[in-house]
Amino acid sequence: MTDLPTVVSIAALLAVAIAIVVQQQQARTAQAVDVRERHFELIKLMLDHPELDYNATDRPPSDERKTAIGMSLWMAHWNTLWHIGKLDEKALRFNLEDLFANAEARSWWRRVGSAWSSKGNRKERRFIAIANEECEAARTKPTVQRREPVKSGSGVRD
Image (cartoon, rainbow, N blue to C red; front, top):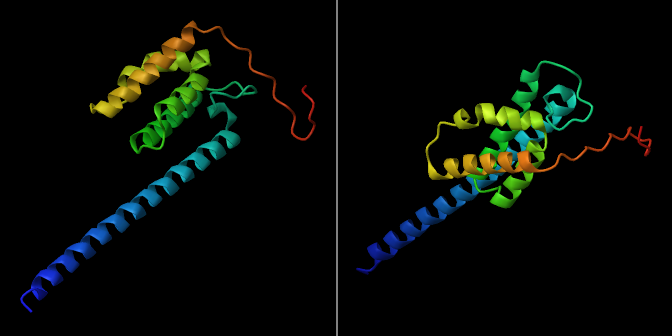
């Protein structure tokens, strides 16, 4: 019976380990839900306010700060995904290539990129470096004419 304290200690340690694993899983699930909700809100915001959408072909003329706010929101969203490991470098570069296809976005990033984040950790520096690389790469690519929007339900371009 001298082994009973040892068995109880091992069982308690095992219970703590299981609780920690379950907590980590719950935290990851909550993070994923938060990111999906943020993405949904961004899309909804762009639909309600097309002047915030850097990629809109039919964007109404407005204060250019609104478009910059939209670009900053998307950049922050991608940065969050990058930091929690839900966006790899290939996907980040794909999103940035789309963003920087727009000359207005390249101009915005050249103005704010160096001060966009004050975090000095390695992962953040890599994110900024990738953004800078994609911005520069987009500058040297020939501009592609975006397709005209399709009227909803018509199936025919204007």
